[in-house]
Image 1 (spheres, rainbow, N blue to C red):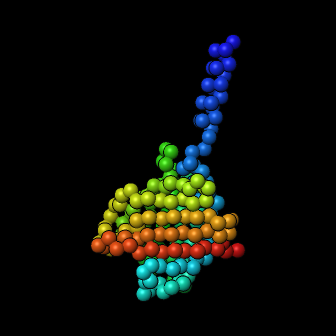
Image 2: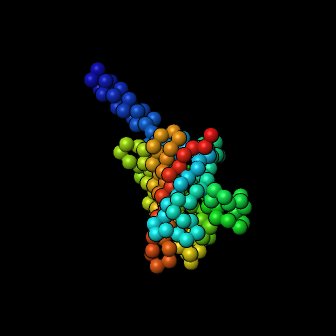
Length: 178
């Protein structure tokens, strides 16, 4: 009788573990709640001459590939939707096994890949640099942090590493558009 109870408890634990969401899945699900259109107020450190303090940007996030990927596109608010002439980076978020990754398709001509780690409260997802493919002549994206404040408000912090390892930090305060 004791062995049957122990075996039942063991099976219950295995089943609970198998169905428990990983931190990566929880973070990915949290990011997918950001699907939609956003207006962003952007500040950079150091200030960039073409951005100015308080530049405006538009961000669109869309769940795709039957829920297996999240597409993040950003552009200047007044910029025409022509990625051949204007900055129009795309970032893809996706799960691979038990890890959440992003690949940033940068207008600098490269594709940095980063891996996520989530905060204890589950509201912040931070991405750490893993590797990069492509041209590094103009620098590359190094770090990203997404913080969900509520359903209509989140922030994004991006760090771009210029040649000579000089960081440029961009903070975006985003409000959902109606």
